[in-house]
Image (cartoon, rainbow, N blue to C red; front, side, top):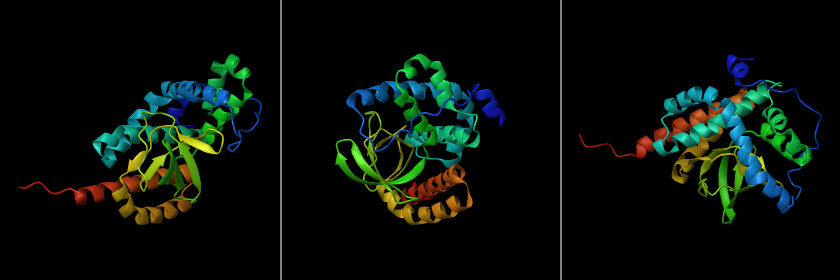
Length: 244
């Protein structure tokens, strides 16, 4: 275990297995209202309070090394934060934010076993790169996993999050919300549609190469680094030079 992991929080041991959360199963409006937004906000705040300060210096260094557009720096950092959270969970079986959260909210969660099953889906989530397809509602669209070519239907539950444009490539981490629908845990890092057109082919080459050579989450961050470098080269090429 790294020093970072030791200093984060004293994680609890796994408890009894819960009933699996079924992604395609319809959920009642009452249950949905319980999950979103109250539980979502509580769980996100819980994780950020515990590890935000530990992770942020490393994440800021990654962001600064890749020179993303100024207005997208924070969004990139937030997506990297969730990548790091999930990476630590996957690397160390004793690290479970869900178990720690449930201990803090034990009395409330006893009454709703489905809640714990839903929270456990967060620790199974994987950050991915998506192609954004057609819209099917005011705040809903299809996203295609660029690695597997599988499609998922995404709902933007938070009005503060900017919806990615159709035809763009976007980076995000999706959480199931029942009814075969998903929502992003934080805003997508989006590449402009015109940039996306130019980067799609070289990005797929590197995606296949690095995902094959590296284990999932490590391969993802390598591909993200390449995508950001490609974005920067395209933007610099398209930016007129200042007159001397």
